[in-house]
Amino acid sequence: MEKTYASVGGCDIDLDGNEIQNIFAEALSNALCDINDSGQVIIIPPDITRIHSRAGFLTEIAAKRLGNRLGAILPALGTHTPMNSGELSRMFGNTPKEKFLVHDWRNDITELGRLNADFVEKITEGAVHYDWPVQVNKMLCRDNCGGNFSLVLSIGQVVPHEVAGMANHAKNIFVGTGGKEAIDKSHFAGAVYGMERIMGRTDTPVRALFDEGMRQYESRIPPVLWVLTVIGKERGFQAVRGLFIGFGRECFEKAAALSREINVNLLKKQVNKIVVYLNPDEYRTTWLGNKAIYRTRMAIKDGGELLILAPALERFGEDLMIDTLIRKYGYRSRGEITEKAAPGTELGENLCAAAHLIHGSSEGRFTVRYCAGEKLSRKDIESVGFQWGDLKEAKSRYDTNRLLQGWNTLPDGEGFFYVANPALGLWAEKGLFL
Image 1: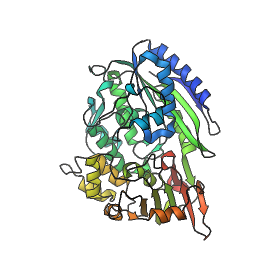
Image 2: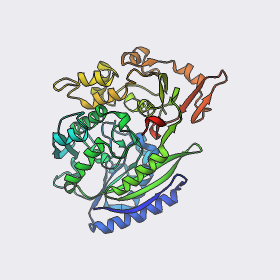
Image 3: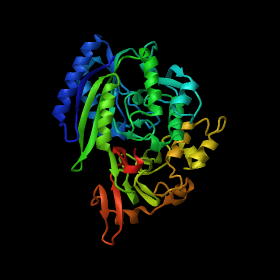
Image 4: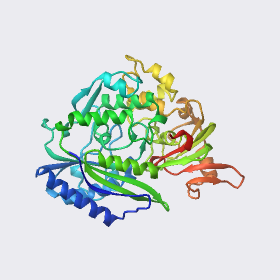
């Protein structure tokens, strides 16, 4: 089914709360009428790491509108740590907490089918050769006794992404509620194919996996109504530049086109030094914090430096197993990790971790200097391949309360580029983003 109910967006648009509520409420009402089914609805929003998406606000609106038809809310955790009560309140307001479920990416999975290895090899241009399982949380499977929903309401933000090119749409289902093998293989395929060829693009090899999975197996899950936002920064606040709602892929394509205009920041020249701040409420691991590397790598000169201020950093992985693998192998070049991730090896059985290690490497082009709090020592930071920086000294020199997003010059003449939140965009030298 292909139908768009709302398509509002533009570089100069800033939708306020009332406008968002009115557009969404009308679109949801029309969609519910069109599916002609009075059954329950499951909402799949992002987790706290995408708090700027306004998905929390949209989830709260939907919960009120749906009333007794709201069956469950399943945050699309993927590999992330489950949200605690405080985080649920912060993101989703007064949405009933008893409606929230926790996705377990290692156990709560149903496999809808598989895409054959020849297809995967073709779309990745030979980067990998393996089949790919189309997996979802068991609650979404129509012929599974775990859930019985008439509609999936998938809510989230479209923004440049290191694995899929642009975040959201079918990624929210097949990764956000997917299983270990699907996440492992999709992430590794993207990493070996090359981040620079993927980030900020609508059509990529990994996106093709998700699209084909949806094409072949969407009949096995309820209809999915996509609710997609595009967010831009406006005078220090996050402005909603676009809201796109519909069944099918058209709404995603429109959101991705707008995101490319708003969230891809093209620079006239590469930068010798970039300073990135990781907000303590959002970034406690390098698993998430390495967005500072992914999203700026095409803007940094060879021999340059990326300085990351990470006051709340406390570990590397989001779970113990991944953390152990990161500590053991470290962030190394694509060639090194690909070799270590051969079939039958420890990394070969944990390809998502292998992909993450590739994503976190500068490939020797520039220095990555992490300035962490007290929970990760200098020895910890350097053991995984990063340089260490003193957080107190760095915060004193680079006062994030005074820095401007973009170019800054200190009194002593040092010039650098500042990124206040790497999750909100992609930064690249114009000639490298073709």
